[in-house]
Length: 399
Picture 1 (cartoon, rainbow, N blue to C red):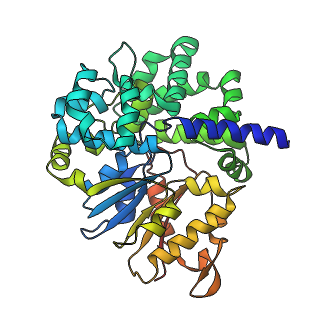
Picture 2 (cartoon, rainbow, N blue to C red):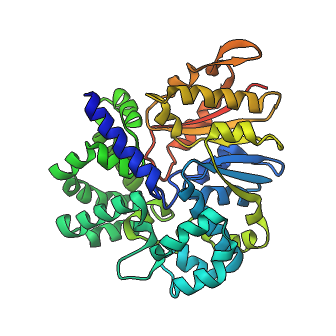
Protein backbone atom coordinates (compact mmCIF):
# COMPACT_ATOMS: atom_id res chain seq x y z
CA UNK A 1 0.00 0.00 0.00
CA UNK A 2 2.90 2.35 0.67
CA UNK A 3 4.12 1.80 -2.91
CA UNK A 4 0.63 2.44 -4.34
CA UNK A 5 0.34 5.63 -2.29
CA UNK A 6 3.76 6.77 -3.52
CA UNK A 7 2.80 6.16 -7.16
CA UNK A 8 -0.47 8.05 -6.73
CA UNK A 9 1.37 10.97 -5.22
CA UNK A 10 3.91 10.96 -8.04
CA UNK A 11 1.16 11.03 -10.66
CA UNK A 12 -0.62 13.94 -9.02
CA UNK A 13 2.60 15.91 -8.49
CA UNK A 14 3.66 15.32 -12.08
CA UNK A 15 0.32 16.63 -13.34
CA UNK A 16 0.36 19.73 -11.14
CA UNK A 17 4.02 20.67 -11.22
CA UNK A 18 4.48 20.35 -14.96
CA UNK A 19 1.23 21.49 -16.54
CA UNK A 20 -1.40 24.14 -16.80
CA UNK A 21 -4.17 22.38 -14.89
CA UNK A 22 -7.13 24.78 -14.99
CA UNK A 23 -8.06 26.63 -18.18
CA UNK A 24 -11.15 28.13 -16.56
CA UNK A 25 -12.28 28.67 -12.98
CA UNK A 26 -14.61 26.10 -11.44
CA UNK A 27 -16.01 28.25 -8.64
CA UNK A 28 -19.16 30.26 -9.21
CA UNK A 29 -18.36 33.98 -8.67
CA UNK A 30 -22.06 34.84 -8.51
CA UNK A 31 -22.09 33.14 -5.13
CA UNK A 32 -18.81 34.77 -4.14
CA UNK A 33 -20.13 38.27 -4.80
CA UNK A 34 -22.92 37.75 -2.29
CA UNK A 35 -20.74 35.92 0.23
CA UNK A 36 -17.87 38.42 0.14
CA UNK A 37 -19.97 41.59 0.10
CA UNK A 38 -17.06 43.43 -1.53
CA UNK A 39 -16.73 47.11 -0.64
CA UNK A 40 -14.62 49.74 -2.49
CA UNK A 41 -11.83 49.67 0.12
CA UNK A 42 -11.53 45.87 0.20
CA UNK A 43 -8.37 44.08 -0.83
CA UNK A 44 -9.00 40.47 -1.83
CA UNK A 45 -6.63 37.51 -1.98
CA UNK A 46 -7.72 34.59 -4.16
CA UNK A 47 -6.00 31.45 -5.36
CA UNK A 48 -5.51 32.21 -9.04
CA UNK A 49 -6.75 29.06 -10.78
CA UNK A 50 -7.49 30.41 -14.29
CA UNK A 51 -7.90 34.02 -13.18
CA UNK A 52 -11.54 34.43 -14.26
CA UNK A 53 -12.75 35.14 -10.74
CA UNK A 54 -9.90 37.51 -9.88
CA UNK A 55 -11.14 39.67 -12.76
CA UNK A 56 -14.71 39.24 -11.54
CA UNK A 57 -13.85 40.61 -8.08
CA UNK A 58 -12.47 43.88 -9.44
CA UNK A 59 -15.59 44.18 -11.57
CA UNK A 60 -17.53 43.72 -8.32
CA UNK A 61 -15.73 46.76 -6.89
CA UNK A 62 -12.66 45.48 -5.03
CA UNK A 63 -9.83 47.94 -4.40
CA UNK A 64 -7.22 45.34 -5.35
CA UNK A 65 -7.13 41.61 -6.01
CA UNK A 66 -4.01 39.56 -5.26
CA UNK A 67 -4.07 36.35 -7.32
CA UNK A 68 -1.82 33.78 -5.62
CA UNK A 69 -0.90 30.35 -6.96
CA UNK A 70 1.99 27.95 -6.48
CA UNK A 71 1.70 26.87 -10.12
CA UNK A 72 3.28 29.64 -12.23
CA UNK A 73 1.38 28.41 -15.30
CA UNK A 74 -1.89 29.46 -13.71
CA UNK A 75 -0.52 32.94 -13.10
CA UNK A 76 0.83 32.99 -16.66
CA UNK A 77 -2.72 32.45 -17.90
CA UNK A 78 -4.03 35.39 -15.90
CA UNK A 79 -1.06 37.49 -17.07
CA UNK A 80 -2.01 36.64 -20.67
CA UNK A 81 -5.62 37.67 -20.04
CA UNK A 82 -4.43 40.95 -18.55
CA UNK A 83 -2.14 41.62 -21.53
CA UNK A 84 -4.96 40.82 -23.94
CA UNK A 85 -7.37 43.14 -22.12
CA UNK A 86 -4.86 45.95 -22.31
CA UNK A 87 -3.80 45.48 -25.94
CA UNK A 88 -6.58 43.82 -27.95
CA UNK A 89 -9.93 45.01 -29.20
CA UNK A 90 -12.97 43.17 -27.91
CA UNK A 91 -13.51 41.02 -31.01
CA UNK A 92 -10.03 39.49 -30.83
CA UNK A 93 -10.21 39.19 -27.06
CA UNK A 94 -13.49 37.28 -27.22
CA UNK A 95 -12.20 35.10 -30.02
CA UNK A 96 -9.19 34.22 -27.88
CA UNK A 97 -10.84 33.60 -24.52
CA UNK A 98 -14.46 33.18 -25.53
CA UNK A 99 -14.04 30.81 -28.46
CA UNK A 100 -10.62 29.47 -27.45
CA UNK A 101 -9.14 30.22 -30.88
CA UNK A 102 -7.47 33.25 -32.47
CA UNK A 103 -6.73 33.91 -36.14
CA UNK A 104 -3.15 35.04 -36.73
CA UNK A 105 -2.43 34.04 -33.13
CA UNK A 106 1.35 34.02 -33.59
CA UNK A 107 1.49 37.49 -35.13
CA UNK A 108 -0.91 38.98 -32.61
CA UNK A 109 1.01 37.40 -29.74
CA UNK A 110 4.38 38.70 -30.94
CA UNK A 111 3.21 42.19 -31.90
CA UNK A 112 0.59 42.97 -29.25
CA UNK A 113 0.86 40.68 -26.23
CA UNK A 114 4.36 39.38 -25.63
CA UNK A 115 5.97 42.64 -24.48
CA UNK A 116 3.28 43.15 -21.82
CA UNK A 117 3.99 39.85 -20.08
CA UNK A 118 6.27 39.29 -17.07
CA UNK A 119 9.41 37.30 -17.86
CA UNK A 120 8.28 33.85 -16.70
CA UNK A 121 4.89 34.18 -18.35
CA UNK A 122 6.52 35.37 -21.57
CA UNK A 123 8.79 32.32 -21.69
CA UNK A 124 5.80 30.05 -21.06
CA UNK A 125 3.60 31.51 -23.79
CA UNK A 126 6.51 31.62 -26.22
CA UNK A 127 6.16 27.83 -26.12
CA UNK A 128 2.43 27.44 -25.57
CA UNK A 129 0.69 30.20 -27.52
CA UNK A 130 -0.12 27.44 -30.04
CA UNK A 131 -2.91 26.49 -27.61
CA UNK A 132 -4.97 29.19 -29.36
CA UNK A 133 -4.32 27.96 -32.90
CA UNK A 134 -7.60 27.75 -34.85
CA UNK A 135 -8.37 24.16 -35.78
CA UNK A 136 -11.55 22.26 -36.42
CA UNK A 137 -13.13 21.08 -33.17
CA UNK A 138 -10.10 22.31 -31.22
CA UNK A 139 -10.08 24.93 -28.51
CA UNK A 140 -7.88 26.34 -25.76
CA UNK A 141 -10.54 24.96 -23.41
CA UNK A 142 -9.51 21.44 -24.37
CA UNK A 143 -5.90 22.23 -23.37
CA UNK A 144 -4.21 21.71 -20.03
CA UNK A 145 -4.90 18.65 -17.91
CA UNK A 146 -8.51 19.46 -17.02
CA UNK A 147 -9.07 20.41 -20.67
CA UNK A 148 -7.61 17.09 -21.79
CA UNK A 149 -10.08 15.31 -19.53
CA UNK A 150 -12.94 17.40 -20.96
CA UNK A 151 -11.81 16.41 -24.45
CA UNK A 152 -11.85 12.71 -23.53
CA UNK A 153 -15.35 13.06 -22.03
CA UNK A 154 -16.54 14.76 -25.21
CA UNK A 155 -15.04 12.02 -27.37
CA UNK A 156 -16.87 9.50 -25.21
CA UNK A 157 -20.15 11.37 -25.69
CA UNK A 158 -19.59 11.68 -29.45
CA UNK A 159 -18.11 8.34 -30.42
CA UNK A 160 -19.30 5.87 -27.79
CA UNK A 161 -22.64 7.18 -26.60
CA UNK A 162 -23.36 9.14 -29.81
CA UNK A 163 -25.39 11.70 -27.89
CA UNK A 164 -23.93 15.02 -29.10
CA UNK A 165 -27.23 16.36 -30.56
CA UNK A 166 -29.08 15.55 -27.35
CA UNK A 167 -26.40 17.22 -25.19
CA UNK A 168 -26.59 20.37 -27.33
CA UNK A 169 -30.38 20.31 -27.03
CA UNK A 170 -29.95 20.18 -23.28
CA UNK A 171 -27.72 23.27 -23.29
CA UNK A 172 -30.32 25.13 -25.37
CA UNK A 173 -33.31 24.06 -23.27
CA UNK A 174 -35.69 26.90 -22.44
CA UNK A 175 -37.16 25.56 -19.19
CA UNK A 176 -36.36 23.31 -16.26
CA UNK A 177 -39.01 20.84 -17.39
CA UNK A 178 -37.41 20.61 -20.83
CA UNK A 179 -33.96 20.20 -19.26
CA UNK A 180 -35.17 17.44 -16.98
CA UNK A 181 -36.84 15.53 -19.79
CA UNK A 182 -33.68 15.57 -21.91
CA UNK A 183 -31.35 14.88 -18.99
CA UNK A 184 -33.29 11.82 -17.87
CA UNK A 185 -32.59 10.20 -21.24
CA UNK A 186 -28.91 11.18 -21.15
CA UNK A 187 -28.48 10.01 -17.56
CA UNK A 188 -29.81 6.54 -18.33
CA UNK A 189 -27.28 6.09 -21.13
CA UNK A 190 -24.29 7.90 -19.67
CA UNK A 191 -23.26 5.81 -16.71
CA UNK A 192 -21.77 2.80 -18.42
CA UNK A 193 -19.31 0.41 -16.79
CA UNK A 194 -16.23 2.03 -18.38
CA UNK A 195 -17.23 5.49 -17.16
CA UNK A 196 -17.89 4.27 -13.63
CA UNK A 197 -14.49 2.53 -13.70
CA UNK A 198 -12.78 5.75 -14.83
CA UNK A 199 -14.51 7.65 -12.04
CA UNK A 200 -12.97 5.29 -9.50
CA UNK A 201 -9.38 5.91 -10.69
CA UNK A 202 -6.96 8.32 -9.00
CA UNK A 203 -5.43 9.19 -12.38
CA UNK A 204 -8.80 10.47 -13.60
CA UNK A 205 -9.20 12.77 -10.62
CA UNK A 206 -5.60 13.95 -10.84
CA UNK A 207 -6.31 15.21 -14.35
CA UNK A 208 -9.13 17.43 -13.09
CA UNK A 209 -7.14 18.66 -10.12
CA UNK A 210 -8.49 16.45 -7.32
CA UNK A 211 -5.80 14.86 -5.11
CA UNK A 212 -6.40 11.57 -3.33
CA UNK A 213 -6.68 13.29 0.06
CA UNK A 214 -9.67 15.30 -1.20
CA UNK A 215 -11.29 12.25 -2.76
CA UNK A 216 -10.89 10.23 0.44
CA UNK A 217 -12.26 13.14 2.45
CA UNK A 218 -15.43 13.00 0.35
CA UNK A 219 -15.78 9.23 0.31
CA UNK A 220 -15.68 9.09 4.11
CA UNK A 221 -18.71 11.37 4.24
CA UNK A 222 -20.70 10.34 1.17
CA UNK A 223 -22.22 6.93 1.78
CA UNK A 224 -22.28 5.68 -1.79
CA UNK A 225 -18.90 6.97 -2.92
CA UNK A 226 -17.63 9.56 -5.32
CA UNK A 227 -19.30 8.21 -8.47
CA UNK A 228 -22.76 8.67 -6.99
CA UNK A 229 -21.74 12.08 -5.64
CA UNK A 230 -20.91 13.08 -9.23
CA UNK A 231 -24.21 11.66 -10.50
CA UNK A 232 -26.21 13.58 -7.88
CA UNK A 233 -24.41 16.82 -8.67
CA UNK A 234 -24.91 16.39 -12.41
CA UNK A 235 -28.62 16.00 -11.83
CA UNK A 236 -28.64 19.20 -9.77
CA UNK A 237 -26.86 21.10 -12.55
CA UNK A 238 -28.77 19.80 -15.55
CA UNK A 239 -32.21 18.98 -14.15
CA UNK A 240 -32.76 21.40 -11.26
CA UNK A 241 -30.94 24.67 -12.07
CA UNK A 242 -31.48 26.87 -15.16
CA UNK A 243 -28.93 25.97 -17.83
CA UNK A 244 -29.23 29.14 -19.95
CA UNK A 245 -26.46 31.04 -18.14
CA UNK A 246 -24.38 28.08 -16.98
CA UNK A 247 -21.18 28.97 -18.80
CA UNK A 248 -19.13 26.50 -16.75
CA UNK A 249 -20.69 23.42 -18.32
CA UNK A 250 -21.24 25.03 -21.73
CA UNK A 251 -17.51 25.55 -22.19
CA UNK A 252 -16.77 22.08 -20.82
CA UNK A 253 -19.09 20.46 -23.37
CA UNK A 254 -18.54 22.70 -26.39
CA UNK A 255 -15.06 24.17 -25.88
CA UNK A 256 -16.34 27.73 -26.12
CA UNK A 257 -18.59 30.33 -24.58
CA UNK A 258 -21.22 32.46 -26.25
CA UNK A 259 -21.57 36.21 -25.68
CA UNK A 260 -24.83 35.48 -23.87
CA UNK A 261 -23.34 32.70 -21.73
CA UNK A 262 -19.84 33.54 -20.51
CA UNK A 263 -17.93 34.85 -17.48
CA UNK A 264 -18.42 38.52 -16.66
CA UNK A 265 -14.95 39.54 -17.86
CA UNK A 266 -15.86 38.39 -21.38
CA UNK A 267 -18.91 40.64 -21.72
CA UNK A 268 -18.32 43.77 -23.85
CA UNK A 269 -19.20 46.35 -21.21
CA UNK A 270 -17.09 44.64 -18.55
CA UNK A 271 -14.17 44.15 -20.92
CA UNK A 272 -14.21 47.91 -21.49
CA UNK A 273 -14.24 48.63 -17.74
CA UNK A 274 -11.25 46.37 -17.29
CA UNK A 275 -9.48 47.97 -20.24
CA UNK A 276 -10.17 51.45 -18.88
CA UNK A 277 -8.14 50.71 -15.76
CA UNK A 278 -9.68 48.03 -13.56
CA UNK A 279 -7.29 45.39 -14.90
CA UNK A 280 -4.43 47.17 -13.14
CA UNK A 281 -6.09 46.35 -9.82
CA UNK A 282 -5.22 42.66 -10.31
CA UNK A 283 -1.71 41.37 -9.56
CA UNK A 284 -0.30 37.84 -9.80
CA UNK A 285 1.96 36.20 -7.21
CA UNK A 286 3.58 32.78 -7.56
CA UNK A 287 3.69 31.59 -3.98
CA UNK A 288 1.85 29.58 -1.35
CA UNK A 289 -0.96 31.23 0.59
CA UNK A 290 1.11 31.03 3.75
CA UNK A 291 4.20 32.70 2.31
CA UNK A 292 2.19 35.35 0.49
CA UNK A 293 0.47 36.32 3.76
CA UNK A 294 3.78 36.41 5.61
CA UNK A 295 5.63 38.47 2.99
CA UNK A 296 3.07 40.96 1.68
CA UNK A 297 2.18 43.01 4.73
CA UNK A 298 2.15 46.51 3.21
CA UNK A 299 -1.62 46.66 2.73
CA UNK A 300 -4.55 45.25 4.73
CA UNK A 301 -6.39 42.20 3.45
CA UNK A 302 -10.15 42.11 3.91
CA UNK A 303 -11.27 39.05 1.96
CA UNK A 304 -9.59 35.65 1.46
CA UNK A 305 -10.86 33.16 -1.13
CA UNK A 306 -9.26 29.77 -0.48
CA UNK A 307 -11.13 27.69 -3.08
CA UNK A 308 -10.97 24.01 -2.05
CA UNK A 309 -7.24 23.59 -1.53
CA UNK A 310 -7.52 22.95 2.22
CA UNK A 311 -8.91 19.51 1.37
CA UNK A 312 -5.57 18.81 -0.27
CA UNK A 313 -3.71 19.37 3.01
CA UNK A 314 -5.64 17.00 5.26
CA UNK A 315 -3.28 14.05 4.87
CA UNK A 316 0.52 14.18 4.58
CA UNK A 317 0.54 17.98 4.26
CA UNK A 318 -1.39 18.65 7.46
CA UNK A 319 1.56 20.69 8.77
CA UNK A 320 1.00 23.08 5.83
CA UNK A 321 -2.67 23.46 6.82
CA UNK A 322 -1.59 24.41 10.35
CA UNK A 323 1.03 26.86 9.06
CA UNK A 324 -1.44 28.44 6.67
CA UNK A 325 -4.03 29.09 9.37
CA UNK A 326 -1.32 30.43 11.65
CA UNK A 327 -0.40 32.89 8.90
CA UNK A 328 -4.05 33.80 8.31
CA UNK A 329 -4.66 34.51 11.99
CA UNK A 330 -1.51 36.61 12.31
CA UNK A 331 -2.11 38.51 9.07
CA UNK A 332 -5.72 39.38 9.90
CA UNK A 333 -5.18 40.00 13.62
CA UNK A 334 -6.62 43.32 14.74
CA UNK A 335 -8.87 43.65 11.70
CA UNK A 336 -12.58 43.86 12.38
CA UNK A 337 -13.95 43.20 8.87
CA UNK A 338 -11.99 40.18 7.61
CA UNK A 339 -13.90 37.39 5.88
CA UNK A 340 -12.81 34.05 4.44
CA UNK A 341 -14.69 31.79 2.04
CA UNK A 342 -13.83 28.31 0.83
CA UNK A 343 -15.27 25.18 -0.75
CA UNK A 344 -14.80 21.56 0.20
CA UNK A 345 -15.21 18.29 -1.64
CA UNK A 346 -16.68 16.80 1.54
CA UNK A 347 -19.90 17.57 3.31
CA UNK A 348 -18.32 19.30 6.31
CA UNK A 349 -15.14 21.13 7.26
CA UNK A 350 -14.70 20.00 10.85
CA UNK A 351 -11.04 19.38 10.05
CA UNK A 352 -10.55 23.15 9.70
CA UNK A 353 -12.11 23.93 13.07
CA UNK A 354 -9.83 21.38 14.74
CA UNK A 355 -6.59 22.92 13.47
CA UNK A 356 -4.59 24.14 16.49
CA UNK A 357 -2.60 27.37 16.22
CA UNK A 358 -1.15 29.97 18.57
CA UNK A 359 -3.31 33.07 18.98
CA UNK A 360 -2.54 35.87 21.43
CA UNK A 361 0.07 33.65 23.04
CA UNK A 362 -2.30 30.73 23.65
CA UNK A 363 -3.03 27.46 21.89
CA UNK A 364 -6.36 27.88 20.14
CA UNK A 365 -8.42 25.86 17.70
CA UNK A 366 -9.26 27.69 14.50
CA UNK A 367 -12.96 27.07 15.02
CA UNK A 368 -12.85 29.27 18.12
CA UNK A 369 -11.77 32.22 15.96
CA UNK A 370 -14.37 31.82 13.23
CA UNK A 371 -17.96 32.99 13.09
CA UNK A 372 -19.78 31.14 10.33
CA UNK A 373 -22.69 32.45 8.31
CA UNK A 374 -23.94 28.99 7.51
CA UNK A 375 -27.55 29.89 6.59
CA UNK A 376 -26.27 32.16 3.80
CA UNK A 377 -23.65 29.61 2.71
CA UNK A 378 -26.28 26.86 2.48
CA UNK A 379 -28.67 29.13 0.60
CA UNK A 380 -25.98 29.97 -1.93
CA UNK A 381 -24.61 26.44 -2.24
CA UNK A 382 -27.81 25.01 -3.72
CA UNK A 383 -27.66 27.70 -6.44
CA UNK A 384 -24.08 26.84 -7.43
CA UNK A 385 -23.92 26.51 -11.23
CA UNK A 386 -20.78 24.35 -11.00
CA UNK A 387 -22.02 22.01 -8.28
CA UNK A 388 -18.87 19.93 -7.95
CA UNK A 389 -18.33 20.67 -4.25
CA UNK A 390 -19.93 19.13 -1.19
CA UNK A 391 -20.15 22.29 0.89
CA UNK A 392 -19.53 26.05 0.94
CA UNK A 393 -18.26 28.07 3.90
CA UNK A 394 -18.42 31.77 4.78
CA UNK A 395 -16.57 32.77 7.96
CA UNK A 396 -15.61 36.02 9.65
CA UNK A 397 -12.48 35.81 11.78
CA UNK A 398 -12.08 37.33 15.22
CA UNK A 399 -10.08 40.55 15.37
